[in-house]
Structures are given as C-alpha cells and as structure tokens.
Amino acid sequence: MHRPWYSYDRGPIQSKVASFFRNAEIAIRPGANWLGSLQEIVPKYDTVRSMASIFRDRLLEGKTAFVTGGGSGIGQRMAERFAEHGAQVMLVGRKQEKLDAAAAGIRSSNGTAETCALDVRDYPAVQAAMQKTRHRFGEIDILVCGAAGNFPAPVTGMSANAFKSVIDIDLIGTFNTCRASYEHLRKPGASVISISASHATMPIAYQAHVCAAKAGVDLLTRTLAIEWGPVGIRANCITPGPTDDTEGMRRLAPTPEVRKKVEAAVPLGRFGTKDELADLALFLCSDAAAYITGAVYVCDGGQSLVRSSLSLSEKH
Ligand code: COA
Image (tube, protein in one colour):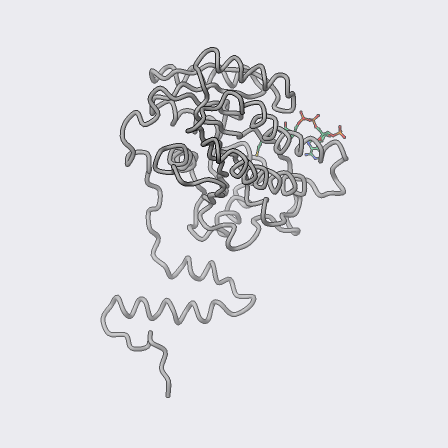
C-alpha cells in the first residue's frame, strides 16, 4: 500500500514535520480552522527584525522626499526613516500641529524637515507645496502618496458624499500629488510610492469606499510606471496589512476582541510595525530597487492570502 512520504519519519525533526503534515491534512478539511491549527503546530519565529540596518548609512544623503500623510502613522515613520538616511523631507498633511510635532521629532535627531499643511483634494494647494519644496530643497527624488481617509460603514450607512470623500482623498488625492509633482521630480531617478491596501484586490464589508479607491490607486500607480518609465521615474505601491499603532487600526480594530480576531487571521500571527513598512519604502527608493517599477508590494504577514479580517457578523 502507498504510504505518504511523511510517514517514513525517523528522528525528532522528521517526526515534528510528519506530525505537522498529518495535522495539516486533518485541519485543511473544508470548514476547519486550518490557520489556527497551523499556528498551533508550527513553532513561532521572531519575524520582527529591522531591515534598515542592512543598508549603508546615509543611503539617501542629499535627496529630497515629499510625503503626504507625513504628519502621523505610516507616512510619518517613512519620513523619519528617510531623514535618518540623510534625506530632507517635506511633511504634508491636513493638520499643522501634527506636522509640526513630526518635524520637531526629525529635527531633534539632526534631520531636515519642513511642513506644508494642505488637503490633497485641493489641487492648487498641492501644486504650491511642490513649488515650495523645489524652492527649498531642489528636485524631488522620493514621492510618497500616503494621505488617506477611512471609516467603517455599510454602503447603506454612507451618503453619496461620504463615499466621495474617501474616493477624493485616497484616489483623487494620489492623482493630484503625482500629477503636480511631475515637473519637479528628478528625471531620471525619482521613485513614487503609493500607499495602497489589500482592499484593492479583495472586497471587504463596510469598506466599499476604500476598496473602490485603493483599486484605483493600484492601477493609477502601475499606469504611471508605464508612462513615466521612459524618463526614469519608477512608481510602485506598498500594501500594508494590519499595522500597529496607526489611526487606521484604531478605527478598524478598536477593541481587544476585534484586534485578536484580526491577529488570528494573519498567518504570521501578529500585527505589522510601521518600521517594517518604512524599511520597505527605503528599499523601494534605493538603488537596490532600480529595476523595480509597477510593482505592488504586499507587507501584511500573509493576511490577504487568507481572508478578510472583517466579517458581516462584526458590528461597528
Ligand atoms: N459613517 C458614515 N458616514 C460618515 C462617517 C461614518 N463613520 N464618517 C464620516 N462620514 C460622512 C459624513 O457624514 C459626511 O457625509 P455627509 O456630508 O453626507 O454628512 C462625509 O462622510 C464627509 O465627512 P466629513 O467629516 O465632513 O469629511 P472629511 O472630508 O473631513 O473627512 C473622512 C474625511 C470621512 C475620511 C474622515 O473619516 C476623516 O477625516 N478621517 C481621518 C483620517 C483617517 O481616516 N485616517 C485613517 C486612514 S486609514
């Protein structure tokens, strides 16, 4: 009779592997909580390590970065990482107080930061910010389109204006930022990074506005990669998963119970960190990524491979 290869186990390692496959086979039956089973059987590895240390110091010396959503969350951490590596950064967001605090943090570590308070929905204001950046720092090497808005609501619980607000901030705001930046971007050499979400490729209940907007962001960015490639501008997306200590997670996973559910739906079994996303951004705007354009980099611990973290049974 045919025996599966894992039944030929000998020592302790083989036996662990064999038991993993036996359990996995059982757990993969339809309806079984196979991810939970896998998380129990597979030993946990420490996956939280900073990638930044593998880059040479001052990797971005003399470069200029323009970061929307730079006053808080993921955008702020990316701006901090760029500044640590010698870039001069323009922090852009709606609230001057937040921008001032973020800029003060960068300056206190001997970095260079300026601020520009605006709403990315306001095209003339974005144009003016680009001009200010060019005047102050020169051509722009790195553009991060990170400004975003979100709230959980079913389609019947949002007005036409509510839906439009998120489309305007996430999608039109990304267009406005890219469009206004073009004449100020370094050619060749500039790197555009749009912050997307798994919503772009997967329907998520209570997030119709973000799904529609982020799908647009992905394709807009990949289209820019084609149109701007010939002048030496690269354009890529970063798709964060559930990321600790961000406004988005405070809104979408507001209680320890929801947070636990989100973690349980992540194959790596934890939230991501802003540092991990900042390291990915650093990689994408470095020469190590010189031949990468039109890519969507998913940094979500595998969450989007499995299923939506929000389900219809969850009330918000
Ligand atoms: N459920 C349903 N509708 C909502 C809502 C909610 N939780 N929050 C806001 N809206 C509606 C408002 O009622 C309004 O619609 P109306 O004019 O028909 O009444 C519309 O959305 C715009 O809201 P408003 O607060 O005036 O707009 P804004 O443009 O200043 O806000 C949002 C933008 C809606 C995205 C807001 O949630 C926001 O500013 N969020 C902060 C940033 C953020 O979300 N960060 C996390 C990024 S992942």
